[in-house]
Image (cartoon, rainbow, N blue to C red; front, side, top):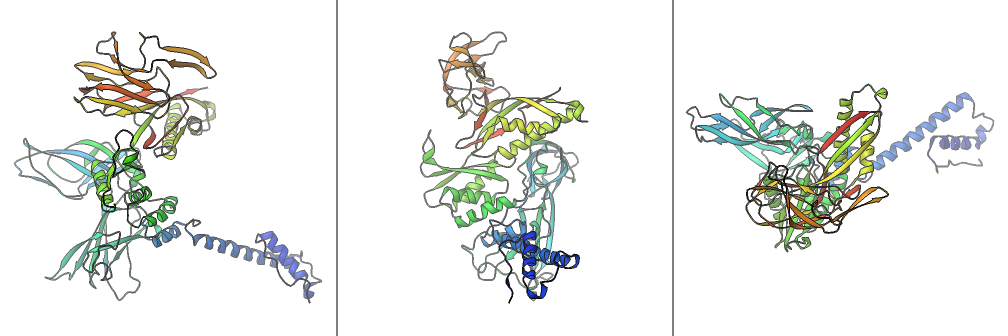
Amino acid sequence: MAANNSISLVSLDFDTLKANLKQYLSSQSQFQDYNFDGSNINVLLDILSYNSFLNAYYLNLVSNESFLDSAQLRNSVVSHAKSLNYTPRSYKSSAATVNITAPQNAQPSLTIPAGAKFVGTNANGTYNFVTNNSVMIYPSGGSFSANLALFQGVVTSDVFSVDYSLDSQRFVMSNQSIDTDSLMVTVIENGGGANQVNTVFSKASTILGLSSNSAVFFLQATADTKYELVFGDGVLGRRPLNGAVIQASYRTTAGSDADGVSSFSVSDYIASSVALNVVSGSSGGANAESIESIRYNAPRYYQTQERAVTAADFKSLVLSNYTDIKACHVFGGEQVSSSVSFGTVFVSPVTYSGAVVSLSEKADIASFLQDRCTIGITPKVIDPDFLYLQVNTTVKYDPNATTLAAADIQTLVASAIAGYNSSYLTNFDTEFKLSRFEAAINAADSSISSNETTVTMKKLVNPDLNVGSYITVEYRNAFQPATLVSSTFFLGGRLYKFTDYNPNVNTFSITQGPNGSVVTNSSNVLWLQDVTNAGYTSYSPAGTIDYSRGRVDSNLITVNDLDGSAGVVFYAVPANQDIKSYSNDVIEVDIAEGVAISVVSI
């Protein structure tokens, strides 16, 4: 009998497998005189070891794909999410608003049809935009004028024929970049005859309240980032008749690539002469939900069971139903320190683009959540408290180490800053670390040796004009004395700005510390500076400042008008290099207005 008649399976790597096979064969009486290192039998052992190793590796991968936590393939993750009744978010069209003006020319009205085409261009290329609904405009003052909502994408459709003799029939839409928010499903029954009926089916996310006559469809994700229509069975939802034609129309979109378009032109004929003015450039585009996002959101969405009770429920419902929203912060009205509001749940969403959510979408989110709240709870959607960072960086590079010009280095650095902003900021509970930010700039190109970067915090306040109010600014991060200053505004016919530095009052002292000079202020007074006349200024006390908390409180003040700004803008230099967001804060680099890049050679 053989001394060793079993193979050790403790380790499944190639070398160990081969050694175990060799040990097993050498222990058999039939092979005691064989040279297992000889070329022929060694090749056979290699084949056996390779086969065993590949089987073990394959089975390990198969096992991993069987669980949501370990799956790596998108199709596997989507399949697991489907069992949790979670539909991954699709692409989202970038949206813009334009004002269209055309002469009346004796026309009683002007109709702009749904799907009217417009064209816009940004740094990524040229994109098609379309209207979502038909709009009828009536004349005023001899011309037609109205605001239009434009959505990036191309309207397309899929047509299916219902045939219940096919057991495996499925209605899978053919495009991967579909914006499911634009999906419209029409079922045509008894086609071609006098009894033809066209019925628009609406999307359902739950079986609650459904009957056999409910004209609804369910949407579920399938392989290859596509989506499938699922209709009722005649008990929960209406079942289309055999032979019916299903028409699914929708937009295919480029997602976030189409954000930032600020000029448009008309592609279709609308009128003999059309003028366009951009009200708001394109924003809010988003790509299909990532694997990691699905892995995180699916089980949490399942926990909500279409109800909004806990803060996690509110968050999960918003993230799973609004594709342009990247994150949201939820808190109760009892947590509002300034004015407690019991029975109110505040939902603060932030978009992928960093832009604020439109008023119409806020109303839609609030209505959506209200239907899922318990009695006595009122959801209210508010904007995040944005803390903008203005960046001034001087980048030093070696021109002998690259073929790029200084302008090219500047472009790369700007791209690196934008990448850092989207990857590490524009979210809740984040922290800006200057060292990491500088490292991202240095990594923009191998020729960059170093950079000197300074950061200024920026807050925007929108006081009610011509109404007495108290202005409060909360950086929630300490800032340096003698660095606070605001934009200018009108009060009583004169031009003013806020500041914490009054050269006529000796309240500041400068000492030398290990990191340079340190400015301290013993009075903590907020001053109102009159800057109406060049070369002349006057100061009057206007409030208090808490430098350690980063808080500014003004006295009662009536702002009559703004001086070219969207509000009163406050600037301050942070006391620490690392800036953290708290509560409802979202830190964001002021990409549009607050990035200054200088490139110098060494």
